[in-house]
Figure 1 (tube, rainbow, N blue to C red):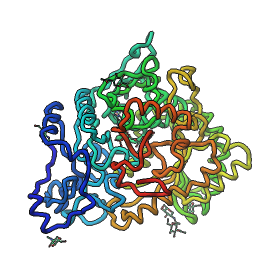
Figure 2 (cartoon, rainbow, N blue to C red):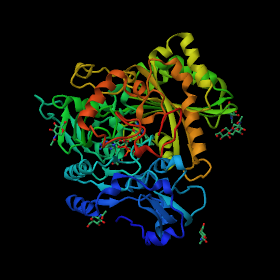
Figure 3 (cartoon, rainbow, N blue to C red):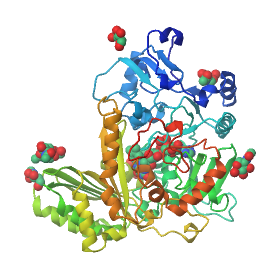
Figure 4 (cartoon, helix red, strand yellow):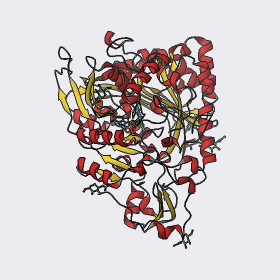
Amino acid sequence: MVMMPQRIQPALLLSTLAVDAAFASTSPILAVPSQAWASLNASVSGRLHIAAPAGLPCFTSYENAWGLEANVPNAEQCQKAEAGLTSSIDIIQAFGSYHNPTFSTCMARGERCTLSANGPKGIVNGTCFQGTVPDYYVDAREVQDIQRSLEFAQQYKLPITIKNTGHDYKGRSAGVDTFAIWTHNIAPELKIDEEFTPEGCPGPVGPVVTYGAGQIDTYLYDSLNGTGYLTVAGSCPTVGPSGGWIAGGGHSIFAPVYGLGVDNAIQMRVVLPNGTFVTANRCQNQDLFFALRGGGGGTFGVVTETTAALHKDQEITYVFLQMPVPEVPRTINEIFVANAEKWADEGWGGLYAVSGNVTNSTARFLGFNTKLSVEEARASLKPVTDYLESFTSSNETLISQFKTLSSQWAAQNDPVLLGFLLPEAGVSLTRSSRLVPRSNFHGEEAQKQLVDFLMSQNFRWSVVLGTPTKYILPESDRPGGPGEASVTPAWRDALWHFTIVQSWDPADPVATSPEALSRTFSTISTQIDPLRAITPDGGAYQNEADVYEPDPIGSFWGAQNYARLLKIKKQLDPDNLLSCWNCVGWNPEDERHGCYLKVRGIGP
Ligand SMILES: Cc1cc2nc3c(=O)[nH]c(=O)nc-3n(C[C@H](O)[C@H](O)[C@H](O)COP(=O)(O)OP(=O)(O)OC[C@H]3O[C@@H](n4cnc5c(N)ncnc54)[C@H](O)[C@@H]3O)c2cc1C
Ligand SMILES: *[C@@H]1O[C@H](CO)[C@@H](O)[C@H](O)[C@H]1NC(C)=O
Ligand SMILES: *[C@@H]1O[C@H](CO)[C@@H](O)[C@H](O)[C@H]1NC(C)=O
Ligand SMILES: *[C@@H]1O[C@H](CO)[C@@H](O)[C@H](O)[C@H]1NC(C)=O
Ligand SMILES: *[C@@H]1O[C@H](CO)[C@@H](O)[C@H](O)[C@H]1NC(C)=O
Ligand SMILES: *[C@@H]1O[C@H](CO)[C@@H](O)[C@H](O)[C@H]1NC(C)=O
Ligand SMILES: *[C@@H]1O[C@H](CO)[C@@H](O)[C@H](O)[C@H]1NC(C)=O
Ligand SMILES: *[C@@H]1O[C@H](CO)[C@@H](O)[C@H](O)[C@H]1NC(C)=O
């Protein structure tokens, strides 16, 4: 059931409420005759809906593309919206909800419809703004729904947004005055095939799993549990493995050994911007296969399903070290930097994170290893456990856990791992990140430079050990091969995916003012400039990157991949109907980006 706002005649309102003149939109969405929407609706089995922000039931007025209107709040629905604020599973099930709510607001105008997890509850006497929540969406269930939607968008030149789970850290699943295709409900039962032959290929390639665009990580892990197979997918239970995750690259706790998401893709099916439904793999439509694997989501078409490689499931060595380190954690950082290459070569996946402040900080290492036994893991990590013993013999907050997990399912459901991810739901945060090359860990001088950088940061950063450090690209997937992926080559050489984070309450009027947000984005962006400077051969993971990344082409793709991607984009979508922030071929002046801020010279 879609909740439709109850409205009174706009004419009645104009006399009592001020209408934002700048909002007199020229959106092509508004130019479409209602009869045309009705016939689109009929062609998609009634799956066309008007979209509203999830917080709408809590407000007394509503400003959307059609203007400012009174809204009759609904206490019960408001309470329900509040209850689901920080629940990931609730967020992904509502079209108007976003995991990172600030990206559904109009940051540039300080206009929101967000609710606070901490602040006052209940009905707000105020205006809910549409922000960047698209105006219309089709709740696609079948390929035809997507085809009809794209054909309609072509006919009326409508800007399109593709939304899946709404997890995106750059707001790419939202867009001002856009027409959205929601892939969340494209979720048929997944299929395992032991001897899969990709379309147009000469023979079988081994065991695979095929899942829909709307499936989420946890569904994959639950479904594979007990089958004897492991697959590479994301760590957050609710991220979409067939959506933005794989489009951007896809890291995993198992990526060090089995490769990135893009390396594990066997075949993808996609509706092109002109409505044609095609199958891409290493044997056909290789340009598209290249673009869909690293080119970024929301750009080349609407993916309907992904077929990915399966590996033999196995026992996994698990380590969790929680280290309350005295004062400034220089020594522990020195140990992690000095050993990074050895640990990468031993196949460690997971993360290393430091939190706290200069007088009281905690370092955590969470490691998963498919290669080493527990005994070997103890030997491998001896440099850090020796250090711990030197200063914390009976420390309550010290945790040192070594054990064997029975399967991938146990690893992905580890409470410590989930403890890092689940608290992000419904919180607004922004990141800055860098893929740090192997050479930055070579020799005392380079190590010192890196440690100096770490020590210059607020103690709120983490290192994802999810780069394909031990994975050898097969011949077919190397540059020039039919299975080449379009992620930056920096992924292949990086030992660390270093990230910093800044978060705020999405309903805090001070923190979400345009001035404060500009400062926050600018601070987080400039904060890792020194790391950019010492990693000229590095890159950045586009899905977990600085919103205002100063060198998106060089960082996300590399000039050579970008040139090929741009050519593909221009061929498939010359009018840029599909587009998103910092995506291939984007135009920062595009009206759909009008709610972003201008930071470091980047923006509308
Ligand atoms: C808590 C949390 C944990 C995370 N953990 C990981 C992790 O372990 N590994 C990792 O690599 N990343 C991780 N990420 C980042 C994640 O990869 C990105 O947020 C990604 O964009 C999510 O994709 P989505 O489809 O779920 O989300 P959405 O926000 O719905 O979509 C993201 C982008 O993909 C596009 N898109 C979505 N579906 C399709 C489709 N079917 N066809 C074409 N385009 C599509 C959208 O238009 C948008 O541009 C995490 C993010 C969060 C918030
Ligand atoms: C589309 O049709 C369905 C079913 O008839 C209806 O519930 C829905 O409101 C319609 N959508 C719009 C935008 O009118
Ligand atoms: C809501 O706000 C308006 C103007 O800001 C005011 O006139 C009105 O009395 C308020 N209503 C309630 C119920 O507080
Ligand atoms: C996965 O399998 C394990 C046993 O190996 C079991 O304990 C767990 O409950 C299973 N999970 C699901 C969701 O079936
Ligand atoms: C560091 O954090 C502790 C609480 O964990 C706090 O008591 C202390 O004042 C903080 N120190 C600084 C310098 O911020
Ligand atoms: C240090 O920080 C931790 C976590 O925030 C806190 O539990 C602990 O009490 C702090 N210790 C001191 C001495 O401030
Ligand atoms: C634990 O270690 C921290 C950092 O060295 C120290 O501040 C704290 O007092 C220790 N706690 C105990 C119970 O020993
Ligand atoms: C759609 O685009 C693809 C790729 O450019 C092209 O091969 C196909 O012929 C087009 N289909 C139609 C119906 O125009």
